[in-house]
Amino acid sequence: MMAPVKVFVPRETAALSVGANGVAREIEAHAKGAGESIRLIRNGSWGVSWLEPLVEVEVDGTRIAYGNVTAHDVTNMFESGFLQGGEHIKRLGPTHEIPYLADQDRWSFLRCGAIDPLSVEDFQAHNGFTGLEKALAEGPEFVLEAVLKSGLRGRGGAAFPTGIKWRTVADARSDQKYIACNADEGDSGTFSDRILMEGDPMSLFEGMAIAGYAVGAGKGYIYLRSEYPLTYRVLLEALDGARSAGWLGTDIQGSGFDFDIDVHLGAGAYICGEETAMLESLEGKRGMIRYKPPLPAHEGLFGKPTVVNNVVTLASVPDIVNLGGEVYADYGVGRSLGTLAFQLAGNIKRGGLVEKAFGVTLRELIEDWGGGTASGRPVRAVQVGGPLGAYLTADQLDIPMDYEAFSAIGAIVGHGGIVVFDDSVNMAAQARFAMEFCAIESCGKCTPCRIGPVRGVEVIDRIVAGVDRELNLGLLDELCDTMEDASLCAMGGMTPYPVRSAMRHFKEDFGAAEEKERVNE
Image (cartoon, rainbow, N blue to C red):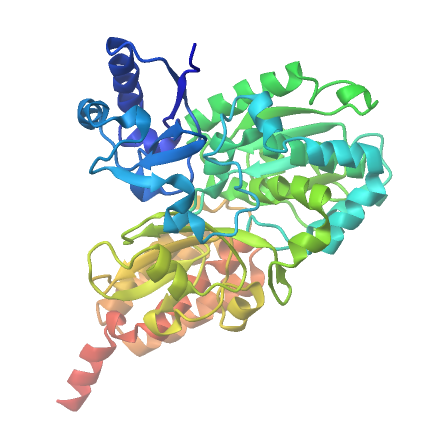
């Protein structure tokens, strides 16, 4: 008896939003009606969001991809020999040969799209849990040294060296320590955490367990944004599978090491992406910034030493331990080592996730992978690093994606989100939005962040209206100084980045041209 044909239809938020569930139902119905034996696998996403739903069929060990499949396409696909990889207008060829994927440097996202995210067996067949096995065999010091040698820095945006953070928690004396995964992915244009959790959740569990073993923590928490309901269900089901297989819980694989993970849903507050506000929320309190020091590495969750890392940071660790920190450090440039999952969004023709080594340029990402703007109009501005990131101009697209290179021009790489705008955008409106966003999302603990953006919106409105323009431009500059220098956290401290970059590069949108015309008259 022949084995069932493997058919892959993603169960991932973006794919579901464009009809993946309907496609899966149609494929099952047609196969049954034709008497064909198939095994339908609901995998995660490869990150080619612009091709979703991306359906695959395995033929002689090779997966053949069909892009932008709709439920209405299924009948015709079966008539064209879909289960044998037959020719069809939606056929893209072997998945691994799709240029968007073939030219990436996959590390953290190596399994995303390739596996059944809920199958422990599939995860292990793709080298899952080998990093944890090696860690348990070699000891905590081996893990700490590997992470330090890798040069891995926090992928959530702050870019703090992960090895130093872990060493600090490992050296702290306490009867209890914690691993807190910050999965409150709230930046505009970001979705890498979600894609990883929906497509390869066990890599996150493995990274958290390795972190727990290295620093002496027995409990982990995933703080997940409430806007990810599918992710939540995937995590809970995957956790049950990992526990049942003995990879989480008491005496993991007979090693004597105990570690388990709980998922905590946030309540929609952007500020809880900041680590101390997240810890407050985890403790059942209102999400508000804590004063630092003490740092979470010394006094974090419930006052105990806590490792706080982003999803992608933790998921990068298993292969660092398994393959060696030096291997990971071979990727990248300068002090920006390894890879980052860049996310293309906004006015972009081919939106999706691109994992590349640091050093790739913004132009390469936008033009080679993204295909330019969706509108076909010229790029005017690009915001990198979320709503608090600076706006870059079309003349700055050749800058390498590198923490230090971005810092040198007053910008941030952040979480790797890239939002593209064409020449129809009004940048004064974007600057106003930055202030308005901060006013809405501020926790209110410090005056510069609570009051500053409210005044900022008012001042920008006066500038655009031409009311005492030069006076208000000076006032806005002073207000940005106050917010940068006196805010307790990055919420208020970085809101001036998009405002100032918009003012610097796009003066004409703030009424400069009109003012000049009046003077000339």
